[in-house]
Image 1: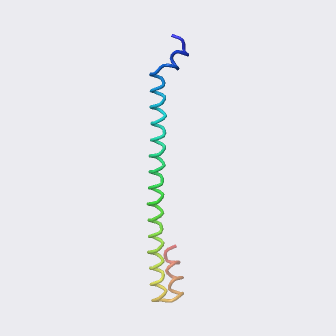
Image 2: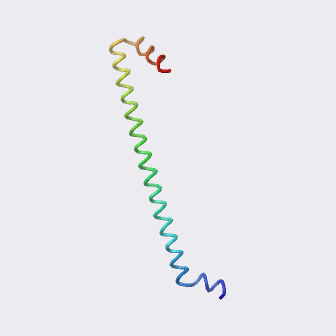
Length: 76
């Protein structure tokens, strides 16, 4: 059998199409997973920043600017 015959057969075309479909689906799934993880991490970071902002605001309201400076120094 000549190599040209092997590449032109129906089985090869079906296998090539299957591989192409698999690569497209795997790429889309990978992109969806990356986007989901990125979104979750961004939301968690925003929530953490907001919580720290509320904490520093409470410290500022209670102890003034010196209290905020002391709290930041303590956490370093």
